[in-house]
Image 1 (cartoon, rainbow, N blue to C red):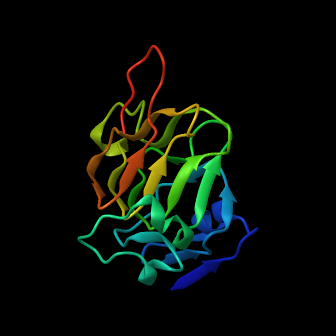
Image 2: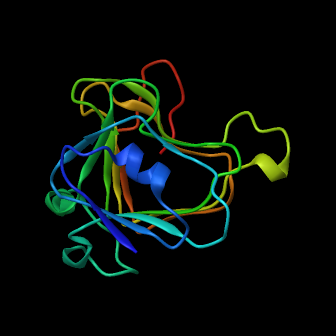
Length: 172
């Protein structure tokens, strides 16, 4: 089923209520304020979180650019991360999203896929970030775009920028 999450509605509630096989569409260029958690679900169907204007983005196999941000919903957070995969979370696709800190905010990590899991069974897996634009604050930056502490994970046809920090390593 397709669930349209209108601007101003709770994206987290939609994620929590989604079942494998569901598609959540978000309105561009609306801003959805997180942080958002990707919980573990039963089953192996994909939960897709995508721009409602995905058809206006370059097709699969072509990389998006910052100029495509107008066709993307903007997902932001002022603290923590924008997205965090919970232990055992799997089969999520993030498609056609602009992911960044709130304006003027420095975040250490935008998308955290795994962190403290001690076994392979609890590690997030099967997560894809596709045709999305991830960036730090233009002035303050961000340390890390996507922390890939997960299995079977891909970042495809996406554009990552402004990952910088004075005095520390940073990674897209």
